[in-house]
Image 1: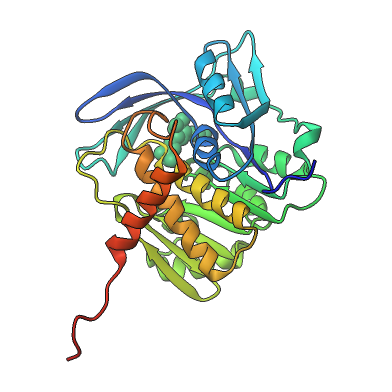
Image 2: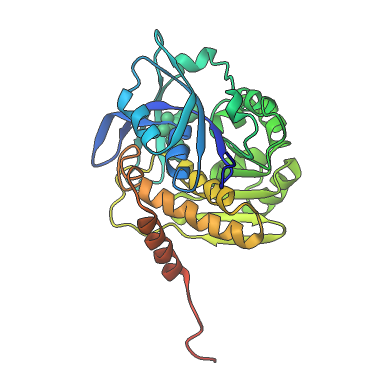
Length: 312
Ligand code: AMP
């Protein structure tokens, strides 16, 4: 069977988070970069997940992923191991957070093996995980995918910089937080940091700025996407990964990466991030419809549309 939409392989963390916000707390909140990415990208086409969990991972979440048509053949379940755990507390502004605890658990000895059926996928997203594992997955693809995307974090920029630079050389798109872009390049100015990142490999760069939206740098062009002003943000965890899911999912769906498609992808990314933050875990990403996604796309369009009311 020939698939209409090329599929996206994602490798990253599948986690049990403990999330504390100024107003609420959830002790067992299923998260992980690959989980959020998969849920968000699943609305655009087939997604194939590579990751690892332990015996404590809720069965229901595997069912949820499968119900969203995420292929979980590459999700290893270790019967005598524990799932990766992350605990974080958000500041009052909900834009900053502190990591209180990280337990690698099954990640410590994870040796990802790409199922045969994944190896010819045209799109690959290396979601946040230790760069050595990202490299292992990239090396197992039969051919170089049409597009390789990457996300990373401060921990890897600090501790495993050489491996990270090796992966960076081989990717087309990097999604990274504002502070991490500065940390990676040592350059406080974002435009100059972007130029430096292009020199490290990625032709396209998305700088995520939390509640201030995201910037795309591509081919000498800059595009700014807002975040939707929401009255209540419940839990920002996973917003960046959901953004990446919408962004890459849309590009895989349209099958090209022209400047215009990249701009639309930025808005679909922002749409998926806006749903994500409306609830804990992937609660709000589950069970969406294309109508609701399109409605929100139009809300972004209204938010940024302007014409000059009259000439000077
Ligand atoms: P985001 O809010 O998009 O930055 O992603 C949050 C997710 O990242 C959480 O669900 C965590 O489980 C996951 N996470 C936190 N620390 C790490 C880490 N060191 N490696 C991989 N994933 C992590």
